[in-house]
Length: 315
Length: 296
Image (cartoon, rainbow over all chains, first blue to last red; front, side, top):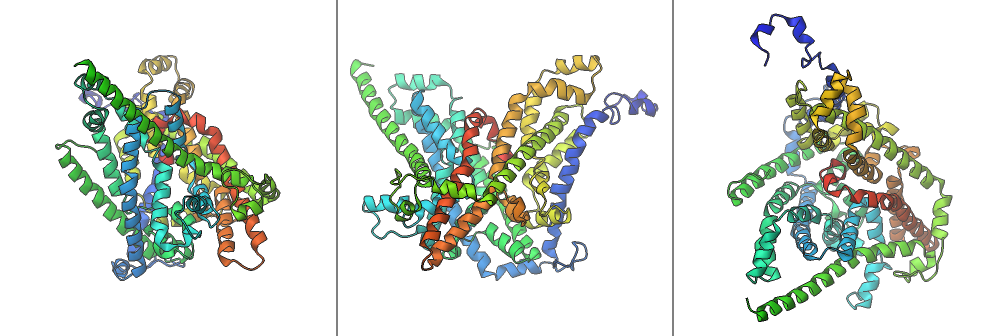
């Protein structure tokens, strides 16, 4: 707020140290960022209007004719789209079921280890796969799952597999392959935030529990897990709001002509319809619909989580 | 508490520790063994690969896969594109974000609430794949090297991390520099930047991994083979090798084992740079967790 008596003296005010012109150097530092956000973030958001238009290669965004909700009506009867929704949800739920719980268990186990080389080795190795690209990991998976690959060999050794075959061309196995490979990549990495939170738990709680004769399991149940409950809630909200998002890199590298029916997810469907077939408007409508549902999911889960958390805000 | 129950607690703890270490060892092996298998396969002859004999130890040591990769100049070309885009991308991204973060970290910045509101909007909303593609096309960035650099210049997650680092610098430093007559740019560059090196390292390392691993940018916007990065090149090798695998054309066994060998050797080569910087990355895990660069 400027003091009232300085208002008439405009010129002086303009060049005062904390006026817009007076801090031109500071302003010149943020302007490129603002220009960036307008071009690369706001213009594409405005570009969503083509979901309500019939945009073809010959049109410009402005000249394309409006079609209202026609594109969205078309979605309802699109069986391939609904198949991709089923696949996305199935894979997301499996990932939620396994990939959500496992990092919590592993974090607790690592936390219970004494500091030392073993703990360091477990952490170093389990975080590693997170940094592999999905193309690298996909290539590895294709080799592990191939007829002569690691999985069939080990399976035969243990007597679990009798007829070695390429596991990736088996559509019925695809959901599990997508889930387990994702869990393999991220289970270790997912422990980091839990471990950081656990390290902040007051150690006197554990000392008191030991004196009272509480077993290790009891200490985990009554001290460690309550200590990270907020972090679990936060992760849950983010995971559920992302249920309709799928890993496009993973899908593109693992999908083949045999497993498409089970592998196609919403993202890859948008990619195929929009960029391979050039149906820009329809693909944008699908993407926009999914984003809207995701935001609704986020708001809804946040509401539920806040209720469960004694009305304390999590997000 | 009597002596007996203490001993019981001791025994419980030993059983607990035993199973804890056992299960974590199994977990660790489940990660190490498949990776070891890839490394071993890459050093196996095509024949051993095709017969599936060298899963844990190469039955026939051979460098033929690597030789095949080294002879393929397109793979080398892709490697250099990846190196170039990673170096240019990391430097420009880190600098661009640092400059913005410095300005935003100053409470006196006029319009600060508008700027940060914009930033937050970009974190939660985006136009999605198709509108972004149309923008990139109309900017003339299709099949241009700059498509690897420009759209990734700015990331609000990274700006927030850097803002926190800038805020941790005591304000008295800036005041005394102001008295000496330094402008904002000079103070930023000469006083602040050296003090927030850990923040810059976090952003640079995680952005570097993201750049190196990024595949979709090339897949979406690049059709010119001369600009293929390693990830896209590897993807094409994988797709090709799978097609061979499924076609099972008579007489293609030799071809099959070479493409498989090239695939596995390229995978190893693509991973080496990540392994090299991994020890440096480890220092910054916690601060980097928030970084958008690794948020898929």
